[in-house]
Image 1: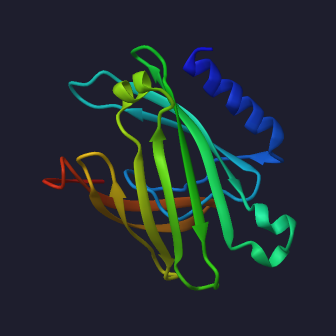
Image 2: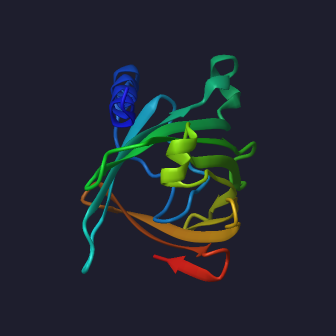
Length: 195
């Protein structure tokens, strides 16, 4: 089965099994956060890169949140898990599909949430040669009510990184409007990518 076909089969299964589906952030522009979608909610993502002197690039995927321990005890809702699948769509050949997973804990309300995860997990050596190594990370997110902050560290072959970000959500016409900014070290820690 082609990687792009596998991605859409998995997306279809996730949407079918979830009670509802809508977009929800679990990262900022360039960094992960400790956020996860709610239990059995599928978040569909479409990402494109546009700009002068560039060919547009399109990627799509989904992620789904789970709080599996609440099946045993509703008080264990501070254990959260996220998994997902992303894949390049165009303009070049589609695929490969890459996995992502995150585990987040917040044992006490008003305390920071700590998460560990990995993104860009390719299944085969051929896929890893095309998309690169997996990005493993640990991140701490805190809601200060007036602003949310995120700080973390990522491990990747020859590219360990420090990252941080801020976000603030406002209600506008009964809709959420989020302002966000982040920065991550790139090029083996020699440069910063900010948005």
